Length: 216
Length: 216
DNA sequence: TAGATTGTTAATCGATTAACAATC
DNA sequence: TAGATTGTTAATCGATTAACAATC
Image (tube, each protein chain N blue to C red):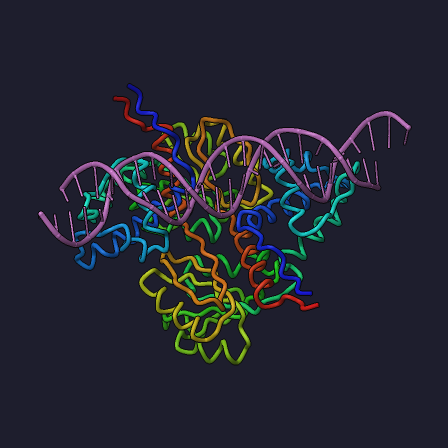
């Protein structure tokens, strides 16, 4: 029988890393068992929602006891694919690209950075954090040769559409995109966007609402 | 009468910047009028949803005609508070902090960066992009003296809780937080989180689902 | 066993989509 | 005027919360 279970909603997936983080915190403090209501206190989600979320993937708890923290975290590890590794490149060796190259946590999550790409001749041939900076011309060739799974796109907006088109043509598996563009992607590529500017506008909206609302 | 309209959902607020972006694109291409269905093509949201979203804030369109692109964008500008400016500091002068200091678009959205803060004596007293790097000890004093509205937190996780506590005690108005921690904030501060690591785990999940699903 | 807490069903709530009258 | 497209109400869909039987 196929294991294609009922599709899990995006909202659930976005909460799993937060459960994971909280579990790691309590495990470091020596906690062995945790109930959904304790996890609720830590994360701010309701106990009911936490149980619902987890039961999308199977019953990891025990009635009357709760969840074994280490086991539950291991299950979430597996659900999130943290046991996989992905050959990863960064496109755009600017400050954001280098900041990401430098983040060890990403590597711990299985995203193994191999190289950065840029068009600036000043940067090409040099190294950033011991990763080579390669000419953008060689993108397709490199992806093919080194079996790259994931590209992190940190180029300026005006280049982003073009870069992403090229990545899709190379059959890249995943794109972590930082450029503020709307992407129409085919089925066979996974895209996750970080919309920094939109997040800031959201902050701006709430600031205005709370502090700068003109009274009529 | 109070202008406290029915609370607008977070999902709507998150879509507004995307409408804004698309409007800017078409305006640059000389487009004057745009219908909800054209905007739908550009953004991927349904025309119906776009009309619903906009009508949270008033009827900006004209039956039989559509929306005047420039006017609609101006309205969204106003809704998002893009006409306000906020005195802003960055806490954590690492790579991510400097990357943000360098992004001109943030300034265009009204977040005027004044300074960076760090604990590293190597950095204190120097400049990053012509912004001074100041000792973390002087945080409270600086916020008070220079009327800081918003703090961007890019410190490592282990310092984040402490930094954010201090910010809240100073009555900061807004926090743009990059640290992967759960924050319990009082009513009088607006917090917007960027969860880079969680986003990456979400990518990992979908990659696993699409490409690495073991068949039983 | 009694108490606790899960797993799961049912009820509620909210967000999205569909439909269409109003009207430019 | 006829055609187009909004604004808005109603219908649908999905996600969250509540409740409680199952069971450790």
